[in-house]
Image (tube, rainbow over all chains, first blue to last red; front, side):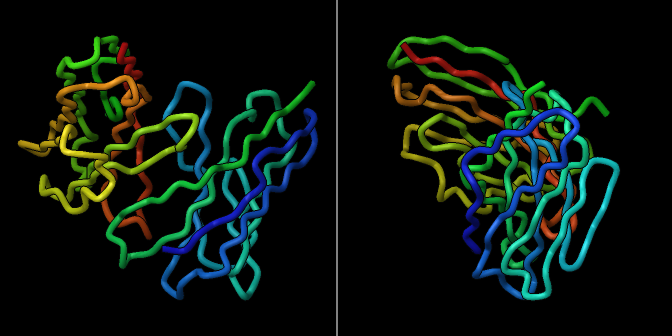
Length: 111
Length: 115
């Protein structure tokens, strides 16, 4: 399973764009990149998933360079309610649904 | 659908007692996962099932822990005997399919405190 590395914590202010980068140097050809969000006292929640280039949904964008050894989660115009821990995960069909969560990035949004 | 349902939401027990955590996955989901979260170790996968069959229990810490899935709509995680170091939040999650194409839906968790 590919190991991921991401910053332990980040601070931001309301209205700013936040970019969280995740390193996954050993990503396999069949692996997808997935981000989850966890609020205090809740279970993780899926945010976005991608394989290459760029993916955008109503919550975030995911940028993946051509070599796929890293990825960047972009949160546009964050609000206080975006304060959470964000996890980057890498995996593919050959692991049968198993997710390995790293330490995550604790994002703190200030007014 | 109501989402993944876990019970109880909070459990306080004394060392040596048996603890049973319960989970009802989302209907139609073929995968069920049990996780444990602590400040020290983060979010750890304990065991997961596919179509009610345990696939990987390598994350189960020791023989005191056991998990069952008697049918597609119910699973239990049992700790016997419980110890203070088992104190954690236990999450159950379900997924319709493989990681690559399907997301996992987490329940609200059970906060376990072993005194």
